[in-house]
Length: 432
Image (cartoon, rainbow, N blue to C red):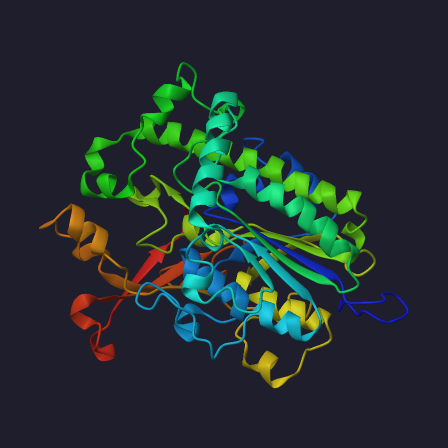
């Protein structure tokens, strides 16, 4: 069903709120079937929304994945990744396009890879990031705020500070005549996993918060010495990670409550997603580098469409987060322009489907390894990856149940980086 906005139904285009959770994998959200009640508020929100059960991020870390959300293109097309950490100004992004429709565009984001340094602030009339404030004021204010929060047990990775800015912005934007596009990025649950005190609720019996915080969270230390950590360590880290997710769920609930308070919810398209997932010891990896497993690319995607347009429900076929831009443009009436035709994503409300989904990793920046562990053999990480995920075939080419999926990774190593004909192919199953 196609959403159509008419002058009889709306006096202007719908507002758009895009919330991106950093490093949040779908499998750890209770609204995606997780066995811990990590996201009670998002679960309630999902009841009135469309839940995309198999949303795949095109990239495995913040820069390429956000660039794909904003451009509707895969990383190999938009070119913002490990080897080129800037988005070309030749490519229009979501905020620029919405500005052309008369939207007031604003953003709250503290991720340095999503902002002026990487060209992802283009089109935003307001882009509130840590670097945009006077350094002394930023440091002093945040130190005082963090000190008080530590004493009270509320210190976090920035969600509280972000929400203090979002509330007045929503009120101000909602009172204006123009529709708004508001992008909110949360640093939680990105490592380090240190949820506020009351969210340490998932720790194993007998483990204190102090003991939990002593567990290694340095991914490079772990990769250099995997034997230094055991199952218990990752059980604790997963508990902390889940606590971060539950805490963020409560902060997102505040924003949704403000939309209702300011009478904006029914005329706003609310998108909640993640830029990528996370490995917490999965596949002998930590954080979000050097792989394209489901733990890294399967992300939540929940969209509450404006009231009276799209009924709530679940979508079980594969979609991608780069589908968001063509979907937004289609809701504004653009389904066939030259720009839309050039996008690699599909309108989520159309009949178009991905025969398979794709994620890509450029050859990674290994400078941290070289600096901290000189002489270490890191050749297994020195590779570019492309993932193709399909619901039809397993790695041996045999049909499988539609609820299962497969990853095919073509790995290009340093020795073959300039020779396509010499490229090696590996098939990797994703039942993990």
